[in-house]
Length: 246
Image 1 (cartoon, one colour):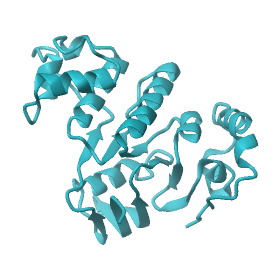
Image 2 (cartoon, rainbow, N blue to C red):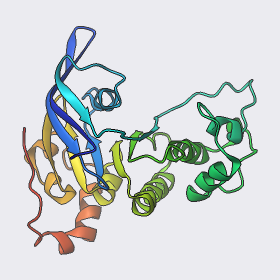
Image 3 (cartoon, rainbow, N blue to C red):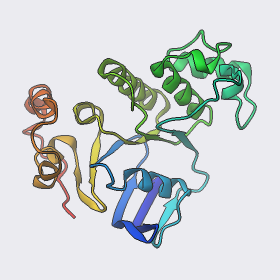
């Protein structure tokens, strides 16, 4: 069975239907990225899958015993209250020094265990959030705009790290992202959301879907040209995957 699935999902917030007729499933080991304009319901969908927001219609099913690691978009740490990385990683459950050291090693920050959270750079902070998510030994990692605020090299490095984590741990990854140029090269499947699922499929298929182009046009910072150059040779004769319009 899928790790997590939504069937005929609808969510109402403040009297407005934010999501409607959403059907999706995430399988073990795949990297799935949700893209869509501001206000399209991306974060609401993640919160519904996490169980934070209750659906107004439809249902969400999770594999029994499913372990979820969550990396939020932003997390505010009170600058007046000292918070060493080791203490942060032990919230809400105490972690062993060995497990914390291994998690930090995995995200490329072996030397920050005793550093204060407020002294970390943006990229280091997001990697510590990822390390904390990995301590739960997740079956699926859920990332809500985890690279917001990072520059392009930092964003690309973070996504390479996510690919390494998926390869080494075998966990699935479900992320929301605005980084279209990275999404196209770092995802197995892309879901284009705008209140409902407009289209979904392999990145090279979604890239050419009229629903996607209607939302994002052609001016995505060279995303199409970059992806096309790197991947068309491999994929254009590959008939796997179809864009599913909704």
